[in-house]
Length: 169
Image 1 (cartoon, rainbow, N blue to C red):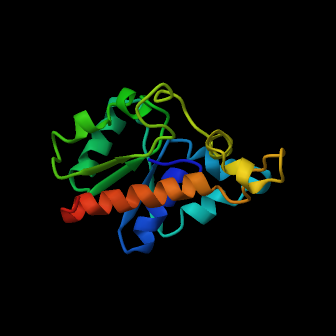
Image 2: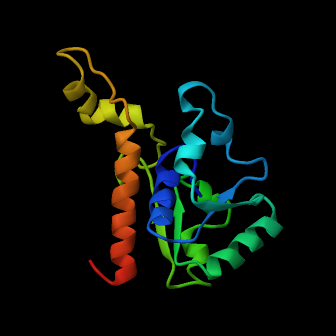
Image 3: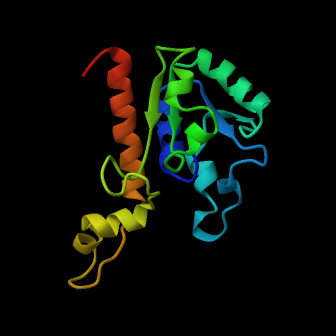
């Protein structure tokens, strides 16, 4: 379950490493497919090497289909806004009952703390962390050309997921 960059990038890393990755999209397809301008290539760039299925998770039939799929999965990646996947009946608490060995990787913009329930955008986090201030000229913060926060979030997430899968710590 991934949209825009962080989640799809995590799935792409797994696919490039040889995993059979199935991208679960809403019934109307991932909105990233329809982004204009500079973002028009995001979908193709971050979703290659994957299979895809459209599932309506707002319907019981869609949730049941996803739960059947998750029963055979090794890893599940999601990067929806906080609370979204749980409202759709596909959170860790729901899925681990039928697949206790499932590695459940939930990629969020913020960890526990005052911003935990907020969604995040790469460029906003670049500003908040000071990265944009290091990149731009003095007094004129400038976001990096690449979505480095989203990409590194995906990389670190996959590394931690692989550590869990191999029994590492």
